[in-house]
Length: 182
Image (tube, rainbow, N blue to C red; front, top):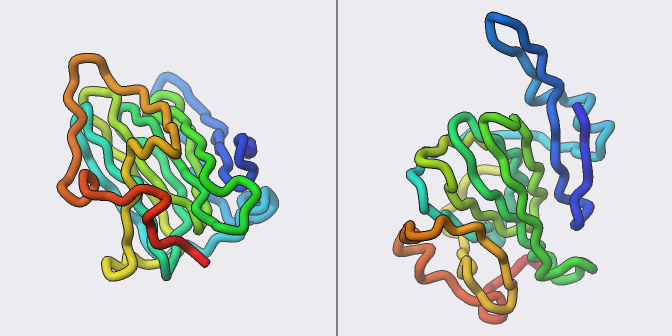
């Protein structure tokens, strides 16, 4: 596996080694010792999977308590995965990283606790799987507007495709109004 820090060094792109032949392929998607050697000392407690159609934007989600680190990968299709640093005392507070993840490239993204997370589905259909370091706690979940002008996230929206949002995501708060990590 290759672990590459992004422009926000705590967010890490993971490229697994893929072994393929005429039958198909094999790859290791998680190995505790290799992740720890790369600085990801995560104890995963929950696995999630979601499927979404093209134009769906989920996020930017985070939990103000029981903050979740997420290891994200795509099983079907392609997404644009965004992590926003919401740690007030961080030198990269308010900055974001966006990475294309797909079933084809097989890359994964480590989004550490303290980050808002969102995805945009650019393929006709996408299924994502992600491991979390803490349990989902709806009482602590918050949402920042995906298009907050202060963040200036460049989402690769599909031309002519409406952006599909849940009511919760459409009513997210601006970063300046949001309750954040301490």
